[in-house]
Image (cartoon, rainbow, N blue to C red; front, side, top):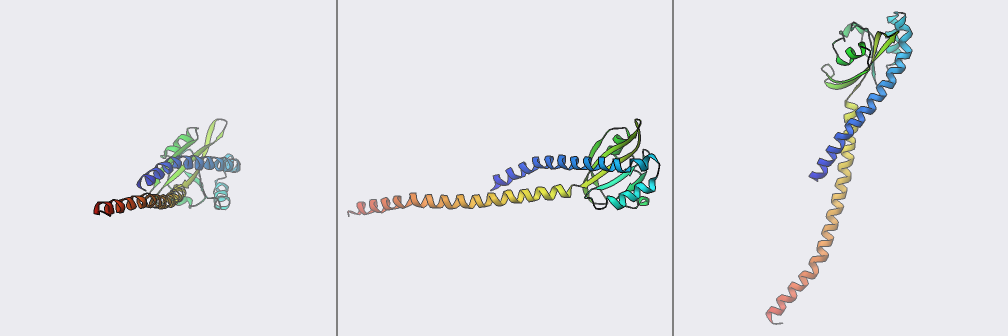
Length: 193
């Protein structure tokens, strides 16, 4: 059972990377959709509409949506009031997106007390970055999926171990009965019977 536990942990640890890649792909897809929807507001500097879009349209999505200007100021967020959000410029994924490249980071969020995956996508006009669309998802989703897979592996492994124990017991009894008969016969023979 110990080896089964180690194998399941190793397998699900590798599976974690697959889950992360899948989540990043979903975040990028959603981010590109958001980018298309808010680009006209950003081009028009209508930041109130950007925030309204985030609050009204993105609150039903499982991912957090944040729109950030190149100076790091947040102009839209699906979960928080803008006044409560600090400057985002120092985050590595935001900095890369401000530089014109899509970026991914996994960072610990002290307020949430958990790791969060962030995908940042630049909003560009004529090769100038006007804003960044940042999509975020908690790692707890991935961790719960992995825990479920681990539980399933251990459950099936436990059933297999019980079946194997039963088969071993049956086979050992089948082998030991004739040997016990021979032992009794040898004892009788030694006594002169």
